[in-house]
Image (cartoon, rainbow, N blue to C red; front, side, top):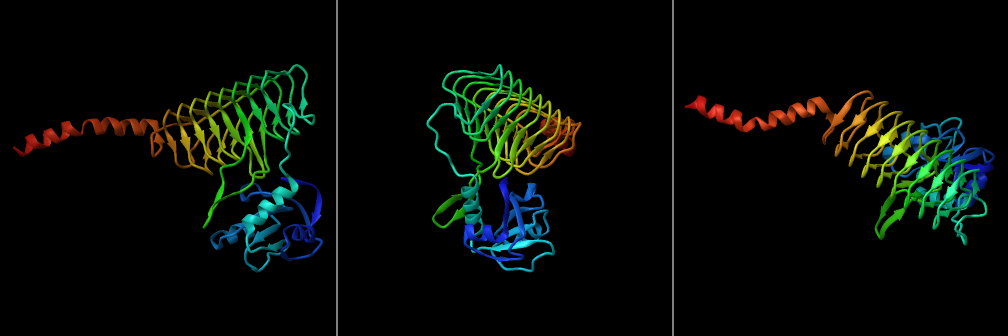
Amino acid sequence: MKFPKVYLLKDIAQIINCNFVGDADFPVYGMNEIHVVEPGDIVFVDHPKYYDKALQSAATIVLINKEVECPEGKALLISDDPFRDFNKLTKHFRPFQASNAAISDSAKIGEGTVIQPNCYIGHNVQIGKNCLIHANVTIYDNTVIGDNVMIHAGTILGADAFYYKKRPEGFDQLLSGGRVVIEDNVGIGALCTIDKGVTGDTTIGAGTKIDNQVHVGHDTVIGKKCLIASQTGIAGCVVIEDEVTLWGQVGTTSGITIGTKAVVMGQTGVTKSIEGGKTYFGTPIEESREKLKQLANVKRIPEIIEKLKQNDK
């Protein structure tokens, strides 16, 4: 998430009421999660296991819960609770805005686009030309939709990320200030849910087609001309490259990459990153030819046991 203007380190420290290490006039351009940070961004870290990763990341401002040696060319924001203060910044720069209209006055809708009854179009939504949005679709604030997109009834774009920190009193939600971006010529089935990024974008690439009842988690990037069948569940921060096919009821873990033109057969659990250009099946996932051989051999076990008994006689 980029801020509307460049802020200074001292300004950010004042917003969250914390101390800082570095030049008070150090420039701050935005805030992001570790996997999408760029120079000028704030990243937060609240566990020693991840200190080095955050400090050595592309982010130049680190919101951290311990005063450590500051890398050259960077700055630190010292907080007793970086998770809480990251949420404070999200509230400050992307606060929730209540709506009193089915289609916000700030929404921009392109020529030839049809929006069926009972849809909700939030603040600052952009919808391109010649789209068809069927009844009862909900499009949260700041969503961007390209040209020639079809979205079927009941789909929801832009709900919050499923991202929580466990506290003694319960679970504390990491607030979502990101967006959903749908590129040109995408088709989305009925009753799909696509969550916005925590600070960045959840992206569906041009020409991709998504069946009914598919879930896409926060900050996931789906490439161009992919096919995703019904009841597939894609976790957060997944990268699905171009022309991938996911058949029905596929599930993925978070933070993995599925390579270009990979095919994942139905009911497979994608538990790790996989190369493109191959077909996969099973849980744990393997190339389908190998997995099917294993299943065929399993079926032969009773026969093999009987032969061993005969040999013993």
